[in-house]
Image 1 (spheres, rainbow, N blue to C red):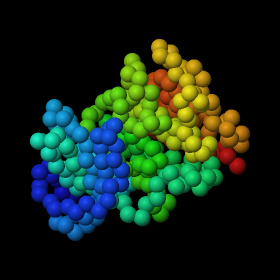
Image 2 (image 1 turned 45 degrees about the vertical axis):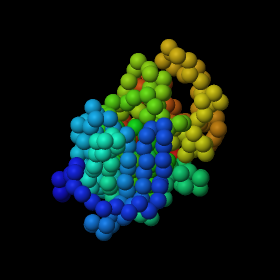
Image 3 (image 1 turned 90 degrees about the vertical axis):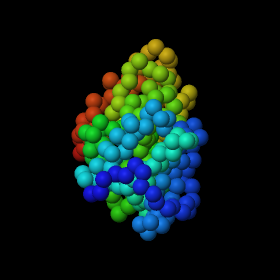
Image 4 (image 1 turned 90 degrees about the horizontal axis):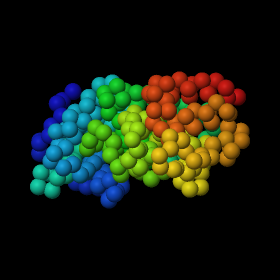
Length: 271
């Protein structure tokens, strides 16, 4: 594997904008690398000079993940625009993949939902072992190709969560409320709970309608369990989802491995 470059010159032709997010100051493009003659993904993210060393260190860790899993796009190189404080990550572009959003819209069997999420846990476990979290898990950041899950678009800029990261509906409460309980891996576990909730009910839980938060409490004021929306859901899978969605990060599954084991056990109870 080649070392990760932070300065090598390349020529890229932008093909299209995959997404843009002014709130998180990040953009993702499909582009053509005219130097190496391949299609790549380019992520552009705001990284202030004081955070550059940390961002580069995280990029190196993501780069090494290609040694342990093929389900994370390979990171080829990076570039830092010091004048404007933009950090660019140039990575493998997964062509032909279908986002998990499409699978959710097709209303797959519950067992298929669980199988997919077990795969996601396997990949995240490798990430968490490296002391990295995704911090923006959502159906659009999970790709399926040939029955294999790919996790894309890592949130890179700081190794600790900060207010405003993530995406509405999927971000953990500690990413928005400035809570005193800050969990790192617990952020990804919460997001997986939201995705599971959406998988089995057809939509993510909505604040004010499906749940309510009161500052100073360690529990939700109320939270509508998914089994109330889909009665055929097994109690075991309902419990898995609700454990992921605990308000206090310390009350969720302690790690991805524990969540994976709970999913495996829940699947055994399905017909």
